[in-house]
Amino acid sequence: MNRILVIRGGAIGDFILTLPALKALRHAYSRAHVEILGYKHIAVLAENRFYAQAVRSIEHGPLASFFAKNSELPAELANYFASFDLIISYLYDPDGVFEMNLRRCGADNLIHGPGKIDHREHAARQLSRPLQTLGLCVDDLSAKLYPSAEDRDAANAFLGHCARPIVAFHPGSGGKKKNWPLENWIDLGNRLLASEDFRGSIVVIFGEADADQVARLQSIWKDATVRFAKNLPLPHLAAVLEQTIFIGQDSGISHLAAAVGANCVLLFGPTDPAVWAPANENVRVLQAPKGEMSRLKFKTVCDALKL
Image 1: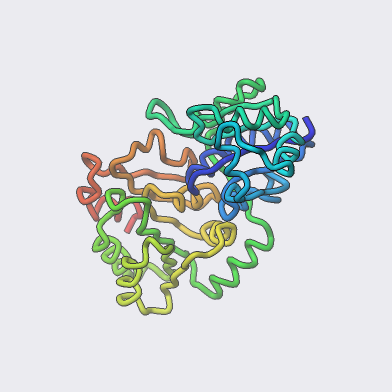
Image 2 (image 1 turned 135 degrees about the horizontal axis):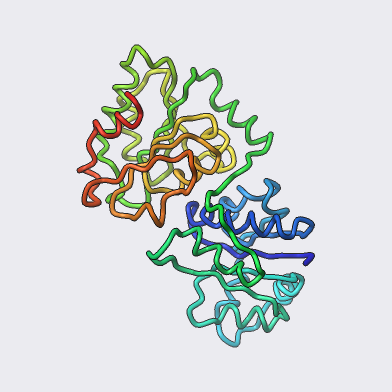
């Protein structure tokens, strides 16, 4: 097996939950050229960072023809797919159109992973199961990421002389029902900053979807011990989180923090942590009563953080 292509769309958490499968693949075919077709800003987490030698964007325009029946397939892409000895696709393809078009290119050795996750078992196990076709068994469901020296240099440049320990907050997620009330985050930060026992710093992680929440936090926390990390490239953010104690929710950033080994306290509401939480030993999950984040008590979180 000389060339392997893994096709993986999805969000940050979806990609990271696939890493245990990629690790098994990497170990089994250590000399193979492994390439990932995915969202480049996410898949770059794996590029020349143990898992893959190259990444290609799934948003490449001509690729759209592979999702249509009886379409004319671009020769460049047809030759690209045909060049792989094995293709593993996690794309949602209920009618088999994408797979049929891959076979039209001459790509015969195909494995189709689950395009959607059900609620019977941990997502990483479901994503690893297709590798049984290759005789591979994945026992370790914990995802691992390996920041490069360049990633760590960028993280150190961002953090500067931040006092240790660094506590990272990520008050956002993929939906409001997954979010602990913002007032609780404010109280938590204020408690840390007011504590005589805390000599460290706070880093608040956010993206465009969290702008309103973070604007409020920025208006409150103007202390130099609080730093705001907006839209850092994911490999650099991973290297930042590697140096922190992380508090987050059910989000891709929480999976990122867990995968680089940060000690994590994760707050879960309506989603099932038995399926969706990182399976890493460095993770502690707090489940909100009845799945309602507003019911997760401030004291419960403080106790978990030993505040």
